Image (cartoon, rainbow, N blue to C red):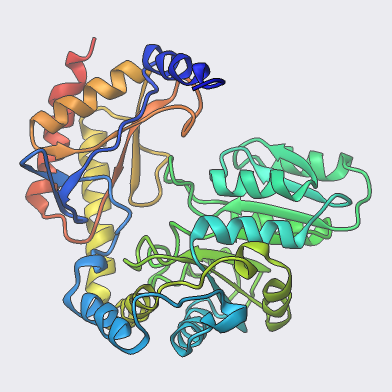
Length: 396
């Protein structure tokens, strides 16, 4: 076909750089185990941190929602797709995040695109962490606002950029709460102080924080209150974005905010206005997961027990894992080839941990990104640490 010669050239270049990607078909999936190419592997790559996607009550709630509301909402929320189950879910999410209101989007990616492009435009400024998720980066670009990227978690660099930037109609300071490739946590108290000093709206992406951070899984605010770095009752985050597809074991995105901002997003967020509403099954599953989050705190405790255990064992084996503060533990091998080889060797030994390569991470930082779930056994955690310690020295 004319004009498509570039496709094979681009794919060949990715192949030479060890950056070409291939879909891996799982004949059975799960947070703890997957079935791939006929082999059962221990899965250390899922974002289903609490193992709720496979919970019997969550699956039953999804089926019940289908029985009542059918398989699809059939429309955008503003036409005829605004179902009662969506509004119940939004009320429950607002309570979790201790906000006045919440609004559900059809995915986390769409939530970030819609929130950012609604809040800021050509006459505005965005201050964004250099390691923010791709959906934040794309939302910033689509907004056509002036973008200032500060060094990762460097509050001094952020303040220099805030101070030097010219006056603007509106300023947005946006950061991941938990950085998905490194497992570290944004300095919310510091960000909140700078947002207040320089008249910024503060937005945090809590995709990997909701259900994980804080003793009840409420998120990053609870996390810092419990560490004594934020006073109880203070709500420093103007816009808390989150997902239903990670610790809550379902699918979709949301924003928790003031009632006024919710109405603003209903009218201004294009990825909400022009997208078919979240499937009822996803809303039903998320509602049940939120109930289980409060009823079964042992899942949250098991997740953190597994994280502490694996982090300790990897540290004892000589790996530098000090930067990770959450159940995401990166093991950086530098080159794409080394990360791919490490992943393949672990798969041969029964562990599924895919390699993460550019552009998902910066050049020269290809890695294995280990994620833990509540259902991993002590033997599985110990086994992974043992295999990593034996395989890594053989990479050369």
